[in-house]
Image 1 (tube, one colour):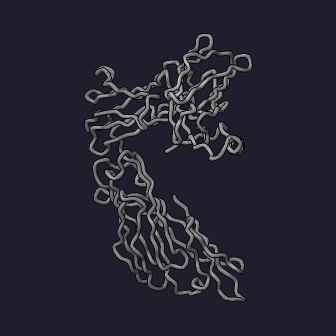
Image 2 (tube, helix red, strand yellow; image 1 turned 180 degrees about the horizontal axis):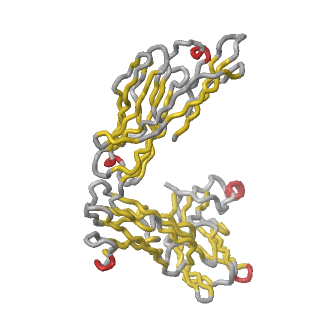
Image 3 (tube, helix red, strand yellow; image 1 turned 90 degrees about the vertical axis):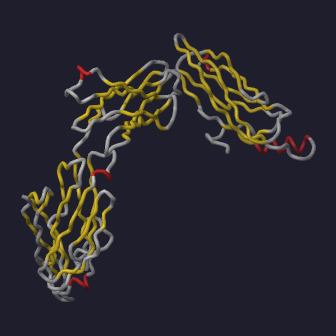
Length: 417
């Protein structure tokens, strides 16, 4: 049994009471008509009195609402839809599913309907008639195409039906369905949680063929392309298959030992030999932890001149004492040095620009080895910045310009084009 309630506000004049409350009940059933699900949930309404000064009606979140002046007409058209929630259940993955919704005019004048609209190309809609006399009805035909839902095993779409009914100018019908799955993947995502950097951690998922259609993995790719999380796959031994003659695959995700600390996100894309689903995405997430933190993973220096020095372009803060070694930079015109502070738990990096450096954009890679007790990590930090021209004039004007520009102050992470 399905019950629906609709409240309508109807002004009857300046000194008259206003009708507003409508209760509607309907019986919901689903029959098969030529293999198509045909929901027949009935919704009807009758006005009842309410308080004065009615508020305009807005149905299902629409911006358009009832015009009180139109509602006062006793001969106004009235739309009645057999259901506003159409659940198709589980539908085939290899053919169209068709359903019907009944649209009636329970008013006293002609009901004019616009062509219905769907929010997705997977759901096509049409009306048998677009104008209904009083008491007449028509059929709204809905067709769901599973091949337009590539990669999805369920859907919920909205169909919009506009009319000249002043009580309900826009009727919105939600169409939902589950697609009979060709395969399953368990788990649906690779969630590593927190991982200590430098450790080898793997997660696996299993792809199982569920139907008669053969499913195989053609290729596997990572997006965005990176070396932080690596993906691979292999077919399981036949004796491990849950169902004979239905192959199973193991997909493996592994966090690289040298992946940078912080939050990692990647997508594993499976290229499949499947008629409906050619590509399938498995998300992967991880948070890499270390005993130290960097103030920036992409430090940027701004407004330095040739021959200038900037302090603290990068800072390392650790939970225990550490050592730095093998410090280097890929640009010969830039020189970087480190200073250990806070009892060996902090290090700051200073940058010096060669006096012969020309103005323009600078890009370099800073590398070093950081170690503490039994943990050792090699860092590779991209450094970017701009070398500006020296100001004209003598040394005094140059010193004043340098003081105003405050070179060497670390700004937010930026990318120089």
